[in-house]
Length: 407
Image 1 (cartoon, rainbow, N blue to C red):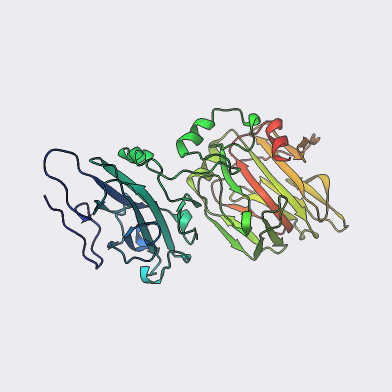
Image 2: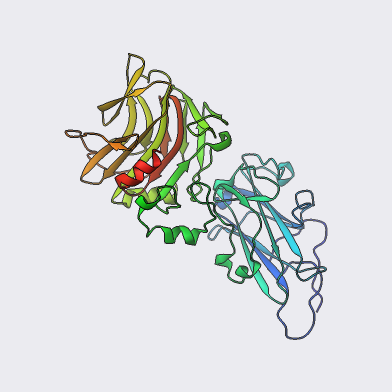
């Protein structure tokens, strides 16, 4: 039974569309890959989506094989396409999906340098003879404008390898996803592996992938990318990202001390879980380089919650600055040098400050009267200096884990 080939022009994505050769007769299962496209972007914003087919070496230059406008509002489904081999049943095929939003056209989106209204996703895998595979590709909000290498794809806001190393895992669509790196760049870990890691003691390895780590910026190579695996979207204003700098020499984020010099992390499902958690931990390397503003420099402010924030309080005397929460000043920091700071908050119990991994006396401090965080995270408002390795957890880390982060 011969299957229809897609013409060179863009045609609507649909479950019946096939690109490739023909299937052999008889009762054997077909050698094919069903590509299913979806998005978490609000469908009224979605303009169009195209899908190209080729190899990793040429798919970025090939014209799209198929495309469609918009998506289904209820599910975010864009469409699907069936790809079959035109030669070797073991050959590798690469897919390039491009989606635009907010009135942008795909023709204006360069897959190698996508703009802020463009999402690019790539996948590459081998066919498995006589085995139907299903390859889901989500074009997510966290990947808007993210630039990856030609052999990489954006997944949950991160650039990871586009290759699916074991195509047979795509007999189960839920398993056919890119591998996420561990929090500190160690061995690969899938989302399922990250969930399993949540049962481990955080103190055993503070750098291991942890599902309770809901936000992590390392600013490596001067980039603002959430490394937690949840793909939180951050919007910087009047800040600088310096590669080759920072506490570890891989990058840092610099603020100039004005109210407009900040990063706003948009509300997300992962951040919303902080509200229902029993506690939280915030940790960051801090290098103050000047006096905070009149109201202090906020390292972290949980929006919609007036009681819970972490700031460097105002100081008129160099070379020290004070750190406080709820207006309580606890310690002094050296100017122009990195210090590791962390706070833990157990709901209804206590706020604890750690400086370079050591807990400080916080007796008599005022704990947050309420915990009503349900919005965005604001970083750096009024702060003068640089930040590195910023982390937010939806749990209270043990002292041993915080000490490990401060190494």
